[in-house]
Image (cartoon, rainbow, N blue to C red; front, side):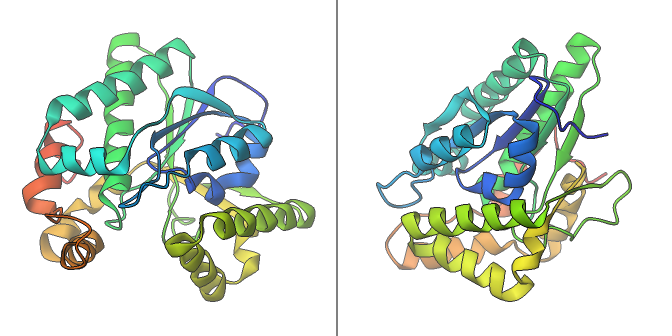
Length: 264
């Protein structure tokens, strides 16, 4: 079941500012509480959190207290340092926010092996919801959406649902995406243009949400290293980072410690 009314019972939890662009039509309708873990600065000193805050509030969303408080570099360093306390505190913040706001439905990032922040965000969401359900006795609906693949990629999953946009809504969404990408430039602009070239503008008319099960995909990374491993190695060679994040060495221990290793 989906929430599409102006209600405080819905939350959108993202690892990076800009992810709201994927579900902008739904956001404008559902008006959720929005939590964003990092500021989107990447390896630069140019955060994009303010741009996302303006877009989210302009679309009717409500910003939570956890909103770009952490730089991307701090987040990545905590992964490399295996700083479980850092992530346990984030989980507690998410859990307490969901509890205080009486959230019933959560939408957030998924595990795709594209970016370690995306994957850990999903693990944090699942872990926080599990903790809240255990202590409160309430059941929360927990959905995810693809950030890299086509929005329709998981449309065949049991329990998946689609928020369909009208032509007017789709045109508005496309305009917002292009304006945002143009202001940010760089990699994001390239990713947006590549997405539109690959899937076509019509792909923006459907926003698919499915029950959170992407943690089951972790087995795949035992056989085939995720994209972020070789991309991280390339960033190290370029001088942006000192070390690259690896699935077995860095990600799997944290995900398991958070209790969200769902491969079994």
